[in-house]
Amino acid sequence: AEAGAVKTSLWTQDDVMEFLLGDVSGVTVTSDAQLMLGAAWDSVATNLTGVSQIWCLARDSKGRVYFGTGNNGRIYRYTRGTGATLVWETGAAEITSMVVDAQDNLYAGSAPGGTVYRVSAQGDTSRYFQTGEESIWSLLLGKGGALYAGTGSKGRIYKITGPGKGSIFAETRDANVMALAEAKDGGLLAGTASKGLLLRVDSQGLARVIYDSGAEEVRSALGWGGGPDPS
Image (tube, rainbow, N blue to C red):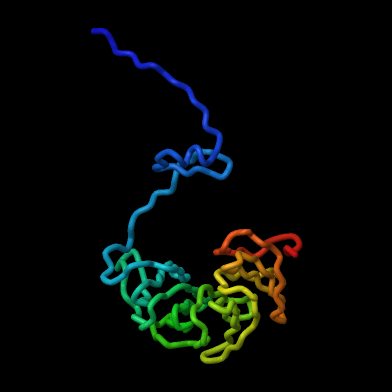
């Protein structure tokens, strides 16, 4: 029998957006338009009753993953053996940020209400600090042990040193502090909304703009790892 033949074709795609116009499945498109095998993934927490969003994640030294939800303000813990377990229904609407310290204590920020919640490594829960602000969008543990909270809608950064102990550390002159990172000299980097600024905050709490993104939000920041800090 005669074998059927097909007509071959050749085309060139050398731009990221050209690749993304297609169905990208099982591969990753890099920023320089290279195709690579994508990471394998699977759903680990589904069908959680009353959960509309998962806002934030944090992982402790034992590999346990915590996540904060809305619109019910819950804190869950996920492990491979037991799946997702409810740790605390805080009473807030949204748990918007999380961080875990070196002793595996979890800190979580809420919106609205601006409360920092704490879940100890042993599972004890407490309302750790009340900022008095509308929202907490970001949390950072500084190398000196202080906890920093980026808030909205007045764009303030709080420095928290213990249960119920804290104060305004910096004023960004924007609406919301969406991201925090620590610079190598102990200062902070802060990403804001609604002006989309990246600010540097020195150890005295003085803030100055080092980059205007031109976007509405800067959602993440990374501390400078080598060489001189950005200025």
